Length: 141
Image (cartoon, rainbow, N blue to C red; front, top):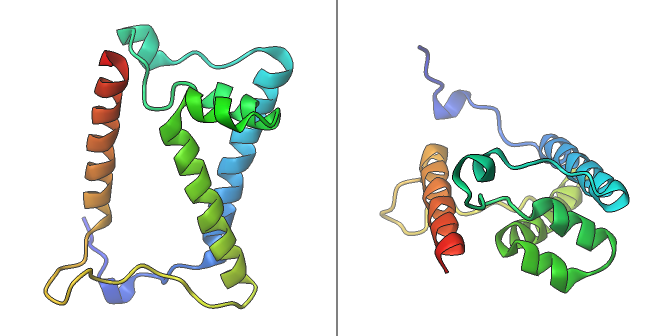
């Protein structure tokens, strides 16, 4: 197994990030449009197995509500996904500005002088823990 040193990694390119974001947006728009026009959506395998709503349950209805301009209803279907979509729009706008030659906006390498840089795996662990907590709170409250 080979490891990649920090000096060997390719720097982030806004255009590459925009491609991923555009693909994600196109997929979501397609699913939301299908549901909004036909009422056909994808069943949630997590819900089918457990009876509990997963962190993404309500996302299709959220997208359909946004297509109809019902922002409040969209937020009510799944606040976490709604907030993530808003953050995605903000990040996308920043990347568009950068891709057009504007300034690069990056989070600081460390949050304090003595802190170490947080690895991506750590962010995934925190995101998974937050999603698990959200599932429990969402289904028990």
